[in-house]
Image (cartoon, rainbow, N blue to C red; front, side, top):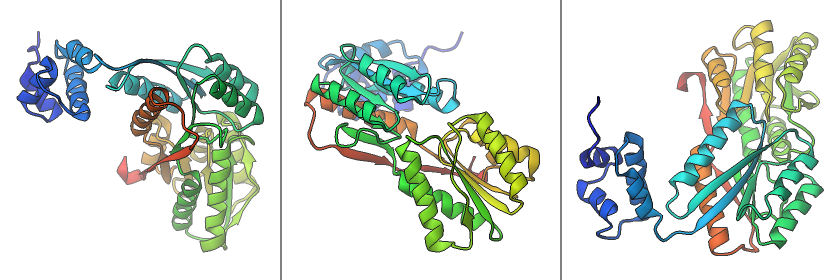
Length: 343
């Protein structure tokens, strides 16, 4: 049997003094919220027996909130990781006693997102969703707002002017980053391909716009083909990529602005040598990481999910405790860039 963790272990893990841990544990003096949270996270991580008591101290005077989340692609590694980080952020927050209610849309259809978003009414205090941009989705957000339930847009900025905040990457810049790395990696001019997930993903449109604008400005010697819609599915992307490679021997680069990158990776593994076609994808998953190592992916542009979820929970709590604001905003995060040598 291993040694039971002590207050000394908690202090070492949290990077604070034993006196600070004692103040958090026994509520002797006021400790900064950020420090108290770090002590709790450290205690829980190493299995300190009094971690539940620390959590109780932290939550003694905070409101109980139910937070609803609507995501999609439940079986994809990225959205599984997203859900895990949401749960962790809600659990770790010292500002609320939170409960996360997470549901997944079965398709990209606006009606499926609408049903889930409207279905949160009466069950939660605030909603955050990764949903398509569509008038019916906007109407659902207006309905929640009229009932005092703020809604936050995640990754894709839907219901602009109605939702409370958008949290995610600056998608126009993401497209330009993808273009810049392909322009540098391609050894000679040729054709380029862009995949988007669908017609209703505003974020994908912005990425495509940024991608094309970069090449117009800095690398006009490349020819960008008509944009392809892959519905964020592996099979469609796989078949379309094989077709592109067969019809365009001078294909130099591919950018997957949304999901479905697994299909492009599989097609390149089958039909090209590593590095012959520069492939830029979004998000780090087991498959994209493996493709980076094997040099079939040139760069992966990732969303810092722990930071996003921490900031999201804070903004959701503010909107409930302090009331919704008429000033809607955008909360941009710095993308994480992964190259073959950085994984």
